[in-house]
Length: 109
Figure 1 (cartoon, rainbow, N blue to C red):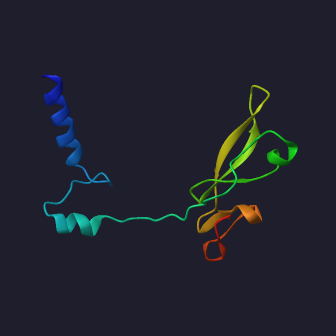
Figure 2 (cartoon, rainbow, N blue to C red):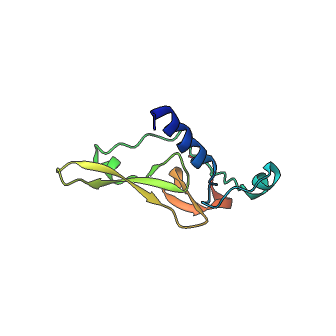
Figure 3 (spheres, helix red, strand yellow):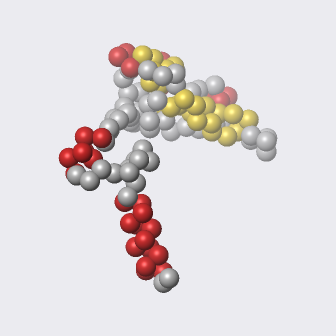
């Protein structure tokens, strides 16, 4: 089987599966009804994470996805590394409060 044929076969198989792993139904209307979009709030214009000073090491940093936040952790090499953490369900990270807060109380940075 040549490379082009294998690529076409892979695309055909890929298009035959839905996002959830179930077979796609035959009509576009049914497919549209089954798709669920999730919009996550975004932290924009927040300071970029840094792990250099003592203050930086004790700061929780905003991730672009507000359901996540970043903290500095010791690395095995003796330096510091960035670790991605998850907020509890129903909460979003707010940099100004240095905590995950209820979604209704959240504002970006």
